[in-house]
Image 1 (tube, rainbow, N blue to C red):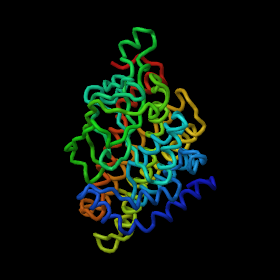
Image 2 (cartoon, one colour; image 1 turned 60 degrees about the vertical axis):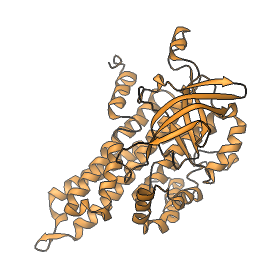
Image 3 (tube, helix red, strand yellow; image 1 turned 45 degrees about the horizontal axis):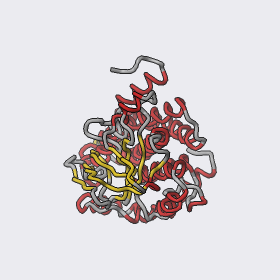
Image 4 (tube, rainbow, N blue to C red; image 1 turned 180 degrees about the vertical axis):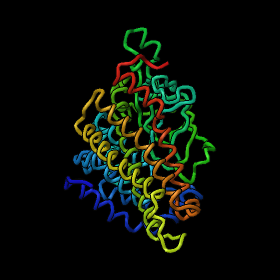
Length: 395
């Protein structure tokens, strides 16, 4: 599966620290769904394994295993069916601060993330802008030693369990930036905002996904004051750190998809080897059961290779279209693989696939969401057509 000894060490370590949680995973997942609690033992296990500090230099308390190490770790957590999306968001924020934050912010935040004492979400999407972050309307205006944020965000994950949010705002309007010849990407800025900040309110959205994914929220920023030291990257120049970080988000989402496919195959193949409904012949002897599972395994191997290559590009800090193509391709194929894996497992399991114990309905929600978030498949295709094939911008 992996040939690099460091990757093997990461995988082994994650398996060891998560092992005590695997037997209790259904109880933990049910508690998370019913009570809205977050599995703190899972979070601390990832911290102990160095996963939360993966994008953080050792000088700030991190493990420095990089995007590749974090991808391997999150794949393993999903394969054990104890993974979730919050480590992706926190890793994204940690990378943004580590690469683009001021020294004071790094010292204040990065050791806390690495130790598991700080969880960070990501607030970018808005009602009108959707995934088009260049149309961000939330504003941030300098006021003395602070910035004052006003506006709204929508479909923001895990606000109830996060300590901070990496928030995308406009410090200069797109119209002014274009008028001055700076382009629409200019004027975006990133801030690290306390979820308990005065003036920040939230409303949980009724998305019907509590059992499968993190809760979603609408946020209202009413004169929320954020210290200037919590600006991540240069004022007006947040587009570059943003684009780098969302590449990581897409790669780690694909790593989770690989892990989900592994778990689905483990459950489905065990059932297919032992389940007999026509005499003594196990259903795994029938090609109608074998072939969909075999296809998932083939796609899984291909996607893993792509995820690892895309992660290496991030670790090398490769910019440009190649890194974007690899990250987008991994995310696109990841959503496809996750859905295929869950569908194939349900087909093999039959009626059992709808029982809560197998977790397939929960995984189907998570898998299907991957085709829409953190970016929709349609927008991935638009990006590749325009930036990698030099076709006219999609209308």
